[in-house]
Length: 127
Image (cartoon, rainbow, N blue to C red; front, side, top):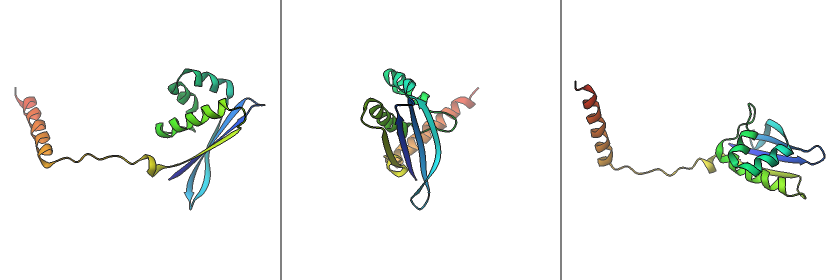
């Protein structure tokens, strides 16, 4: 699934607005949520650390997963610091972030693990 985040900075009102979109039907983005933040709060959170920034951004209606949140934070920080930019946009594809390396397990390793588990079970059952 595709996700799009649009971040718009309004320096007159001192706010940052984030809109979250998802593709629900044939590459057409649908607005899922939007949140508005005080630019001063954003500045304070940026000066602290990423965990503080994530806790500021997340709420009941807007809760980006960690992988997306890290990318968004980088973009928000650049947007906040760049006085010439007022808007930024990110498009994420789930499949790009969900690729995992799988470890090949040899049958011998599985058998050893099962034997260890059986040994533990026997220890529990002995008086």
